[in-house]
Length: 362
Image (cartoon, rainbow, N blue to C red; front, side):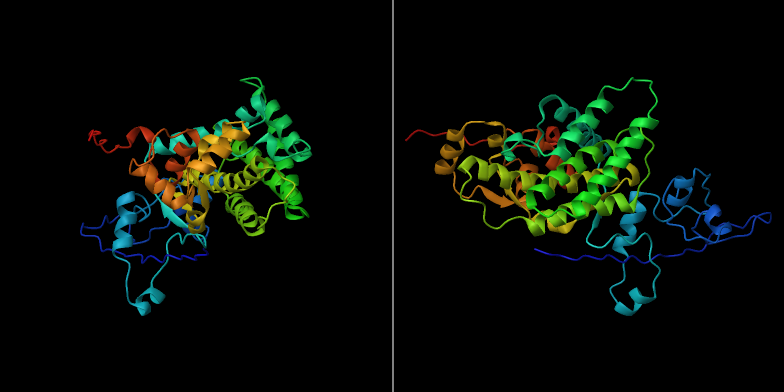
């Protein structure tokens, strides 16, 4: 499924009902004072616009921006004009990127999602495995690009608590650029997958770590979206016949999970810095295997048993997140919990499970 969604909001201006202060002229401007003086376009984010936040400047508004609170943003959506001519003449405020939907989540769900993604580099250092990287996916061992990411994650994880971050930060950024350049020129799908997974590991540190200076970057957001979309578009339709049943399943599952985690990281990055999620519609159509326990079960027999006892294991990610939200899925593992937080903005602990019907013997 390929969807393109573009939302246009009308910016309303209201007259002040209070008597103006003679010492300060009345203005209806919503832009901050710094952007007005610099004759720059202001995105009107609260409490600081992106330009002031990026340059470390004070950001002051004469009037509170319409993007300041959740209520104000919802009111804009409700008041969006239906007449095409009105839309064309209206002003736009913080128009979302192409192929995205802005969604606001509870802070507890944001913290859970960010923490879970930040744990991936640490988990990979310990076991060389995460919810989206499985060592058995690569028959000849982990690709060099992932091994390099393993070393960098180890250096970062073992840094001194009060040590200088400049060196490790420099190497992480430099390596991220190199991996993305390699990703853009990958000639084989295995190479493409390896670069994608290594890039996600590094970006889990650069984009989310609380100890590193971070501000929202459209380049980072675009990069993570491109990783997911290219994997989606170039995934092989038919796998080699030389692969065993488990090897074939692990490769396909690794691709699916890498796409999902790339988009979850993009969403968490936006949530952590802009307080709303960057939601890419095509992620809802991604195929998802509900047999999540097979990822950590190393036996070939487990896959064979579940293949014979469970039909229709592949559903869309949208269907899976809906099922988890409504309490239809029990025994949710960590990966499922992260999907729930990313797709629905909820924690598993807050899910209300429907009462089970008692079994009646006949």
